[in-house]
Each structure stands twice: as C-alpha cells, then as structure tokens.
Length: 145
Image (cartoon, rainbow, N blue to C red; front, top):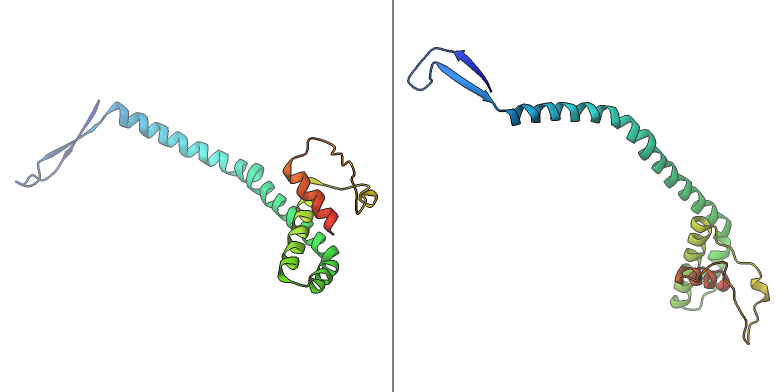
C-alpha cells in the first residue's frame, strides 16, 4: 500500500495533509486498463483490414451483381408488369423476379431442362441435393418466367 502526503496551508475546512491510498486492486486495474489501450491500438488496423474492408467489398460485389441482373432483365420485367391484368399478377411477377435474382447471385442457382417439363400430366423433378423449401421457391421462380 502506497501512502502519499501533500502539505498545504491548513485551515479548519481543509486539513494540512491529504492521504492518497492506492490499493492493489486499483493498481492492477490501472495496469490492465493501460494494457487494454495498447492492445486496442494494435488491433484496430488489423480489424479494419481483415474484417471491415472485406465486408464492404462483399456488399459492393453483391450490389453490383444485383444491378447487372436487373439491368439484363429490366425490359422483360417491365413488359410482364405492363401485361399483367391485375395487381395480384403484378405482385406475383415481382416476387418471381426477386426470388430468381436472389437464387442467381447468392447461390448460383440454375435450372436445366425446364423446357422438357410438360404443361399437363405428371413428371419427375430431381434436385442435386436435398430439396429445401428455398430450392422449390427458386425452381418455381424460374418456371414462372
């Protein structure tokens, strides 16, 4: 335990000496706090370079892919929306394009042989892996276009 005395001009309200006591816990906390500040200084550039910048780049890549997809299909989408008889059909068309775009740029989803599916009657549809509900959404979105 460290004791430090300060001399001053003594009055009735202020004593002549003020005793500062620093406990072992306070000293340990100060050392830890200093160490934490040094670690933060060292880790900040690392976190920025290895976490934040790659995340920004991934967001920009996905936004670019979505922009390219919408640019490629914008004419077809506007024709389908103008040809829709009611608001319900227009909403269904928008949702179809949304799921198709999501499957294309996020999962690289593609459908092969859709032209071989008959308009009436039965058929067998095989998935590459286990059919999840999202796979069915992507398949129906491709079929409705």
